[in-house]
Image 1 (tube, rainbow, N blue to C red):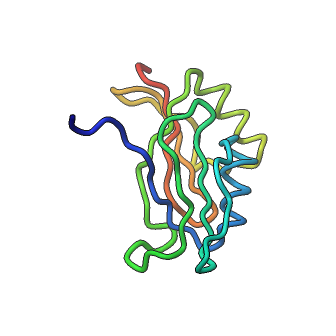
Image 2 (cartoon, rainbow, N blue to C red):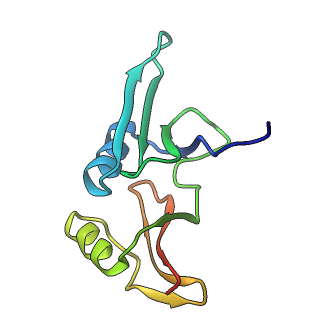
Image 3 (cartoon, helix red, strand yellow):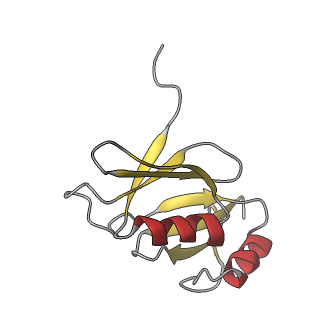
Length: 123
């Protein structure tokens, strides 16, 4: 059959509650799960409003220090409107919207420093 989709990406964070607040309340992601396993390990999973690949907010991978992810890209249909909306919710962008040969984009980081790119294709 082969690979059918990318199911989840683990995002290394220091505080799962703070990270959940950022992804749900500032970015507008959907909370899919927030539960504790029998070993006391917390499972927090969020996804973009349109679905697709989930993000797991993790603290248990020693080889993935919090803030070590870079270059994750979030698509949007109208970058200016999305940029303005996220900035009003408290997302601190690294600078203004920029244009590249592949589209328009702006960058920001989550509270732990994981780097994100907000992009509109075809810019």
